[in-house]
Image 1 (spheres, chains in turn yellow, red):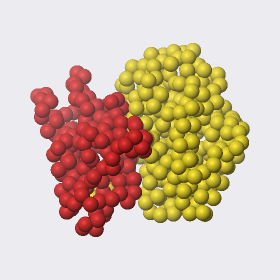
Image 2 (tube, rainbow over the protein chains, first blue to last red):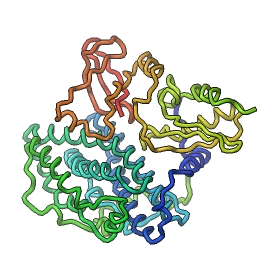
Image 3 (tube, helix red, strand yellow):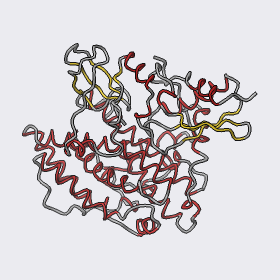
Image 4 (cartoon, chains in turn green, red):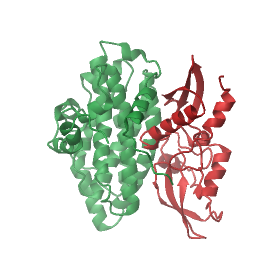
Length: 284
Length: 169
């Protein structure tokens, strides 16, 4: 089997840039008044997949079994691929000469727009899988709704990504059931993970002025409209997993979408951005 | 002299997938369109998985191969819509996968964004994937993911060999 050529060599990077030009026409990209909100909203989509993808990649070489290690790395790869599409479009909307890489590697924590849920530490494998499930259940409904976006560019990214994400949701649902309804120890760990993560889930459904602007433009659904769909999936899977829905507020934690993060994000960025910060423009 | 579209498609059929070199980019169904813009040949290619690391390499291989065949100006265009599905794999490609030891996807079962779990709960049945080595239908899934994003790990309960399944997408 031939080994893969280095994808960071300039010709390949240049080819990818040129291939991404000449895309489907989208009137929203010309709407100057909408630009700031559209850009921010695209960063919310892309930053959440970027940070969760990075978190999952931390398991590479550390998975409890080989199959899980490979599955987590492949899922991370899907998220990073989706990030390239979302942040690539964000860069086009912004039209300030920045690329998806610039947005990923050269923004500071306060400029990141991901929900806090995805930046929390991995914890044990149970916590990682539970977080994945809670996110996937939202991600699947969000992308399904975005398939009807009035922005053709957003709709085509969503149609592509939802196929990958339906697979993520299938896998994470199955594992939550297996571990929740598993041994005494696995059940306890899954319940502890759910209790810990629960207050962070509400942020996915909380709207603000940015959401209102893109909702009014028909680009994205009202985040609150996804809540009943998410609750249906979560309630059903948790019941099958013999886990208790925590008896506490699910919307206590906010701020990630507005750039107010936990201290964990800084550590992620320190690792992820070090090379580009220390050696600007470096490639290998 | 400008080559015909049929000639270009033949040349594209010579470009192997970098991860599974027995099948070509046309077997995979990822070349969506050819058109000329003046003296530039525009080749529209759709990615398989959005994060597949082979995508950029495939673009480079297509450009290099067509230039070696005498098409001086080639431009690759990324086309996301409609999203790639394994239903686009050619019959020849499926046969080559089986001969290579990879079970091809079962036609028409690509999830198309619908959760497989939801489909199963609604009464859908489990897939039967034939072992590419001995043909037995007595197989079971080991893991939803295999050596690349497009494959899952399976094993045969008759010949006991593990194998890759090119999963439906």
